[in-house]
Amino acid sequence: MLKGLLAKVVGDSNEKELQRLQPLVEKINSLEAKYSALPDDAFPRLTEEFRQTIRQRTADLRRRLEDLQAQSAQVWDGATQDRLQEEIRRADARLRQEENAILDELLPEAYAAVREAARRTLNMRHFDVQIIGGIVLHQGKVAEMKTGEGKTLVATLPLYLNSLTGRGVHLVTPNDYLSKFGVQWMGPIYHFMGVSVGVIQSAAADPNRGSFLYDPAYQASDDRYQ
View 1 (cartoon, one colour):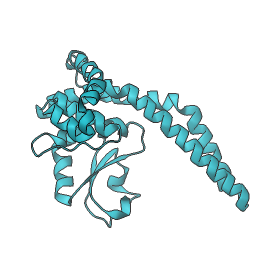
View 2 (view 1 turned 120 degrees about the vertical axis):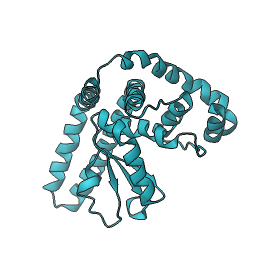
View 3 (view 1 turned 90 degrees about the vertical axis):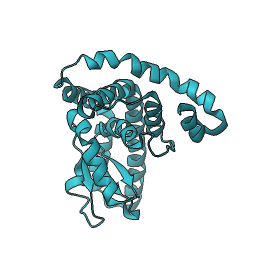
């Protein structure tokens, strides 16, 4: 099953990819005993610690971006505005790059915590193949999995991890039913971790309110948000 997933992700290089990802899987597995020993109330605190780490390590980059945005709001000259917009674009790219680097560092601890949260709330445990799927998705790749291989559970890993930046993260489903089903089924995991989760049920919803403001949000596919 594991090799089958990897073959779909990386084709003929699946063995090489497996070797590359295996140390991460082993690291996550090595943390299982640590998190199984923690009390329930430690998990929301852990989420806040992760968020604080990101905030502290990106503070200077964030201030730089905010300063540029403030300058842009006060400028009407076209040439100056163009220059500031380019600086804003580069500053935001640097911030996102640093955030992604921190998320990569946090991944083993975050995935181990979510695995334990799933065990306690749903009596479900992410298998190694599902951990692999979660890593692949976080890395921006496509992981094709068959019905019954645990796609819904896999998604909780990268959704939780990427919600830590505060930028929000969306899981897109084929229809409203699956969006609602995903939140109802997996919601206890996010709540256990101290993370809000919502479902976007209508394409007419206001993106400035409600479920759009949750950490992860589940929604049906709509070209307006792609």
